[in-house]
Length: 443
Ligand SMILES: O=C(O)C1=C[C@@H](OP(=O)(O)O)[C@@H](O)[C@H](O)C1
Ligand SMILES: C=C(OP(=O)(O)O)C(=O)O
Image (cartoon, rainbow, N blue to C red; front, side, top):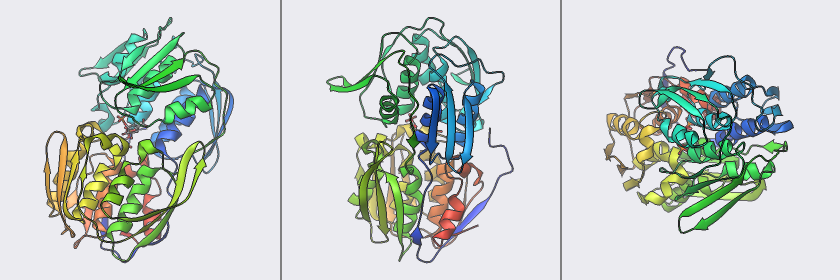
C-alpha cells in the first residue's frame, strides 16, 4: 500500500536525559524473508516478532496474492501456509509494494522462475528506484520483463516456464540483488551461483539453510561465492525475528547525544554483516556495552546499554559501508554532536535509497547550522559538539531521514521539524511512543 495520506508534520525539542528500556521492533530484512520463505515452503511457518511496519505488511499482502495463506495471530505472531517452490498462483491484481525496495525486489525474484505473470508498482519513492539491477539478472533465468523507461516501476514479469540456473557476479554490493537471484534459483534446476565482492547482509543464506535448502558460501579470489542447489523442498520453520539493529540505531543515537541519558535496548541483532554502525560508534568513543551476548533465531543478539558521553569524529572506510548502509543518515546526525570531522566513504548507494539520502541529510543538516560537504561517494560532517536547529526538513518519503532529523532535534538548541513523519510507519510504527517513553519531546 502506498503512503498517500496527508503529510504528518512532526517536531522534536531539546529533551532532558533519556532513560529506560527501548524494545525496538523486529528486523525488517528478516521479516520480509520469513514471509517469502514461508510462502515458498510446503506447510505452516510460525513467525514471532514479525515487524508490523507497512513495508512488511505489503509483502504479507503480496504473498497472499500469490496464493499463500498468511494470517496474523497476535502482535508480531503470524502464520504462513505456503504453496511450495514453483507453486505461486498468478495474482489477480497489481502487486503494490508501497515504499519497499526489499519487498518488491525479493518478490520479483521469488516469482521469476514460475510460469505466471505479475505486475509490480510502488509509491513515488519506489517508482524512482532502479529495478534493472534486479530484472537484468532475472532475465538470465529466462523470464520476460517489461518496465517503464529507465527500468523503473511499474514492472511486469512473465515468469520463465523452463528456467535455467544462473551464475552472476553482482555489479553493486546489494543483498537485495543477491537475494532476488537466490530466490529465483530455488525453482531452476541445477546450481545457481551468486558472487559478491563485498559481504552484504546474509539473512537469505542463513534462512534458506534453516529451511532446508542446500546452500554454501565459499570465500575465493573472486569474492564470496554462494551456491544454491535448485528445486529443494523447503520445510517450514519457526522463525523468531530478532530486534532490528537499523531501528535500534535511533534510540541509541538519541541516548548518545542527549546529555545525562542512559538507556537499554534489549535483543538487538549483532549479525556481523549489519554491525558497522556499532563498530563506528565505539571508534568515536561511544559508551555502549553489549550484554547477554547470545543466539536467537539463528542470529547473534545482545542487550545494549548506552550512555551519553563525549564523541570524536572518525573516518568510516569504504569497505565498512555495506555493513551499515541504512545507518549513515543517523550517523551524520551523531557526527554533528561529536568533536571533529567525520568522513563517510563509499556511500554512493545512499543516492538510490528511498531518497537520495546524502542530499537529504546534507541539505537538512546545513539548514540547521551544521557544516556538511558531500561528493558522489562521500559525506563529511564537521562536528562542533552542538547543533543550532530551528529548521523544518523534508523527509522525501523516507523513514530514516524523518527519524534522523527528529533525533537531532532532541539535542539541538532550537527544535527541528520534519514536513512528514508518515513514512516512519514503514519500518518503525511505534517510534513516537517508544521515544516519548524514554523522555523524548516529539510531537
Ligand atoms: O536485503 C535487504 O533486506 C536490504 C538490503 C539493503 O539494500 P541493498 O540491497 O539495495 O543494498 C538495505 O539498504 C535494505 O534496507 C534492506
Ligand atoms: C533502504 C531501505 O529499505 P528498502 O530498500 O527495503 O526500501 C531502508 O530500510 O533503509
